[in-house]
Amino acid sequence: MDTVFGRIIKGELPCDKVYETDEIIAFKDINPKAPVHILIMPKKAIPNLQSMGEQDLGLMGKLVVAAQEIALDMGVADNYRLLTNNGPKAGQSVFHLHFHLLGGKILGDLD
Ligand code: AMP
Image (cartoon, rainbow, N blue to C red):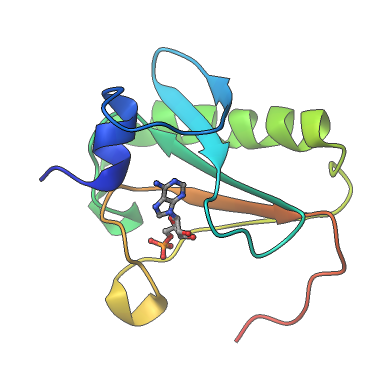
C-alpha cells in the first residue's frame, strides 16, 4: 500500500530529513506536538508494530540506535519519549510503521 511516508521514502514528496541510512529515514513531523518531534521509520513498508516479524529483529535494534543518535543530535538525550501508535484506535493515521520521538519540553501523562 502506498502511504504518504512511502512516497517520502521514494523521494516523491519532500520532508525535513534529520537522519538517513540504507534502511532507515527520520524527518520532522509536519504537525509537531513538542519542540522536538521526529518521525523515525524503516524504509521497508511494514504497516505497524504488530506487523513486524522475527525477520525484523535487527531492524528494530537499528531503529532504537537511530532514536538514540537523533535524541543526542537534537539535544534531548535526557528528556524524550519514543512511541508508536498501533492501529486506528491507538491514533495511527499513516500505515507505514513509524516511531514518534518527542522532546524538548516537560512531557505529560500518557492516556
Ligand atoms: P500517526 O497518527 O501515529 O500515524 O502519526 C502520523 C504522523 O505523521 C502525524 O503526527 C502527522 O502530523 C505526521 N505527518 C503526516 N504527513 C506528514 C508529512 N508529509 N510530513 C511529515 N509528517 C507528516
